Structure formats: structure tokens, C-alpha cells
Image 1 (cartoon, helix red, strand yellow):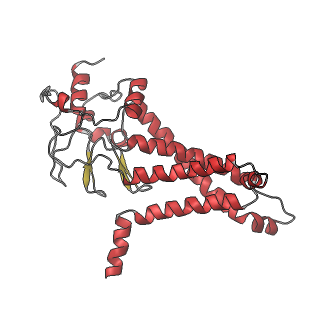
Image 2: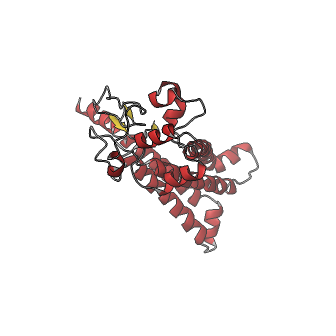
Image 3: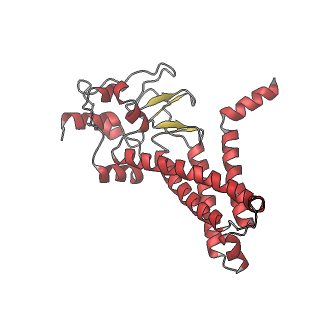
Length: 272
């Protein structure tokens, strides 16, 4: 019984997912360094710049993975928005409730949800500016870690594309198909993993950059018709959209929690 509980706790805390991701990353990296790839050839010639840069890129991707995976995505822990850092000035302006949808109380954690927040049944918390729960990092993507998630995807994609090129450079010809598979089996397996993850990372990065550019979350994009503050607006209207440049600037460069009720009120009161 204790062993079953330990296994359940490992899955619940994401230990197994993170350990598997780390193991696959370093096994593939080791294969690329040990086979007759461009990395190995550079090492043999004493040209260490490219191997060191590739190794550092892999290390950076792993560090970002753990940072995003273990970071607080913006859990709602109190029943008010007044304690939000950097938002006191906005909350003092007394947002008119007549033009802004009322905050609703979460049916699970019983806390009052700020606008754009949603309860995650996996994490058992409401998350500010909820985007989605990602099983890859075993954590929610929300207001505090969304930018780092996008940066992680970019670094991961660069590492994967480079690994794809390195793996292809190590494929060697043989006289028979059996000898060819025997000589290149590990590289072919690595190519398969890297190819699949490259496609997934590219699609995810493209989707998130698009949503960031219009200041929309995955949850809002997929469930617009069910969200109280969006379902009564036009199909193409987004009350949080400030234009592509401002949206990208705010997302990547402004490190603060936003009171979205105030933004919503300003946009709905002064439509462009």
C-alpha cells in the first residue's frame, strides 16, 4: 500500500514526467556526441566551439524546462485583488461594476476568481490569466510563467533543430540494409524522437506567439462562447487587445500582475 502511494505521489508531483524528459534529453545528447557526427568530427579536430555551444544550448533548455515546470504560474491564494503587486493604484480607481462582469466565486476552491482566471483541477488552484495545463511540464501555464514557457519553447526548438542536423550528419552508408540499420540504429531512433518533438515544439511556439500577439489565451480562444466576459462581445472583438507591438511588449517586457478588470472596463467603455 505504501509503495502504491509513493508511485501515485511521484506521478502527482510530476517527478516521473520531468525525470523522463531529462533522461531522454541527455541520452540523445550522448548519442550525438558518441557517434560519428559533426560534433564528434569537430572534437577530433580539436574544434570545440560548436560542441560546447550545442552542449550549453541543451543545458539552457533543461534549466528553462525546470524553471517553467516548478514556477508558480499565478495561483490565486487570496480572496481579493488588492494585494496584487503593482496593482494597488489601479484597484483604488474603483472599477465600475455596472460595465464589468462581476467576479465569480470558484466552485472548487471557493475563492473569488479575478478576470481571466480559471480553476485547474490537476493543480487544484485557480490560476491568473490561465492559458492551459501542460502535461509536458506537469504544471499550469499562467500569468507568471507564460513568457518563460514561450522562451523555453523557442530554446527547445533551436536545440532540437540543431540536434536534427547533427543526427543526419552521422548517418553512414553500408553495403546491406541489415548492416545499415545496425550501424545507424541509435541515430535513427534519435532522429525519430527529435523529429516528433521538433514538429510539436514548432506548432506550439507558432500557436502561442499568435495568441500572445492578440493578447488571448488558449483557454479563451477555445472556450470563448462559454466565458462570461467574452461571449457577449463580437466574434472578432478582444477587449484585451492593444495591438501586436504593445501586446508583445507587455508580454515579454512588463513583469507585473495585471488587474484585467480595469483593462476590460477601459476597452469596453472606450471602444476603438
